[in-house]
Length: 57
Image (tube, rainbow, N blue to C red; front, side, top):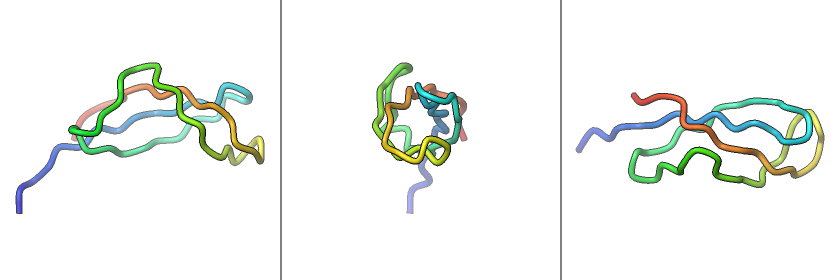
């Protein structure tokens, strides 16, 4: 089995500023500033999060 590289992206909620990490395969990497609609734990609703590429593994 081939070892795959991973990228860890930080996503930041536009409403409250809450940050969390999303691991991605390098082939599925998104550019900095990519908008992602996900559920925010602090806001208790779906909000737009901005994705920032953090580092590689």
